[in-house]
Length: 469
Image (cartoon, rainbow, N blue to C red; front, top):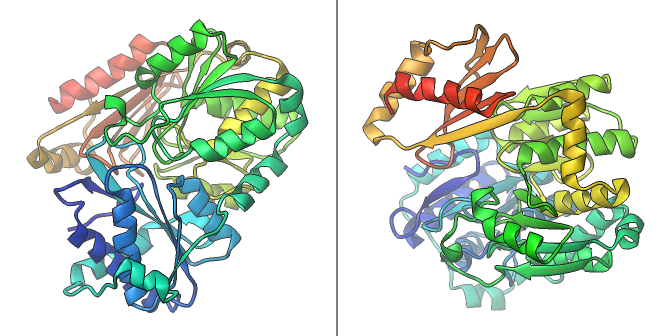
């Protein structure tokens, strides 16, 4: 079966990600649109720079066009945030991005975007899965013929409104006055063009690395993790850049290297941007994070008389809660965030630009900024482990943790346990550990946070030993 996880359907190229299955997904989307009486508006289709992405986008368009759905097609690769923004701006019902985001190079996938530019909710993807399963015969039309007949239309200047909306929310004067020198690592992804336009417009000096199309992402994971940015770190320090910026394959996850070579992780970026928006820009409101994201955000929100809301993993939960409580910002430790008033999904183009604005306005190196936050709110260190297991073991692990609700013997006293999304253990000292299955890969993810990295690692070790993996 084709299954949609937290980031859409993802599968290994040549195994499950093949033309037949891609067309089945497209047929299912057509069925969903007609079932909901939403086939009267175009669907915008975009794609990243992965192997087979452009082909998959065309195969998808061919099915939609043959079944009476107008297609707006991008004639170049584009980041996921652009597709979300277009769906929202043009008041479309659906958008599609061909991407596997930060997954390894052997993966590709399809991300479904719904009204208002949101990630498709669970009830939508569950119904889509049923329709795909029921599909027997898929009708499709030759791409070039559909273009000539007007069933598929190339989108002109797709980035204009997206870029204008971002720049209207930025302090462009502060960026111009500071004149930052930035080294950008596009990680062979699709987010380079819009970010370069913004920084060039702001008169920043920006150089770029890893901008060629590479199906293997230079042998690296296309994720802006500390391990994956060692080359960026060395180059930033060697040539005295103010900072290095990197984003994943489809432009929705962010990583930053400051001028000292320090890697600013997603938790730190979230904390700094929330503090900056409230303290320096005068915004008011709570903040939203998922279960596996730092509790420092709770402390910062409390200092402003605000609340930090916790939601399950999956950005659709974050964007929904932002709307519900009018939050300033929402994000997750995996590297994605969005800000009030922007799109309802992760956007590293906007968040990278906002981060550069923060550095320009405060005049502080990110390390200095983060050190000041730690002096005020304490030190929070998160450790993560991704564990592979034999497929036949998944049911047993789930039964032990989620059904029987058994726990390891921890050294710290447990205050409560949350089973809303995996198993999250909260300790009386403020630490936590969470164990959950990945929604995009066959992995068991364990996150732990403490004021000490070794202590956090100890919580993970206890879970590993307990589960014997």
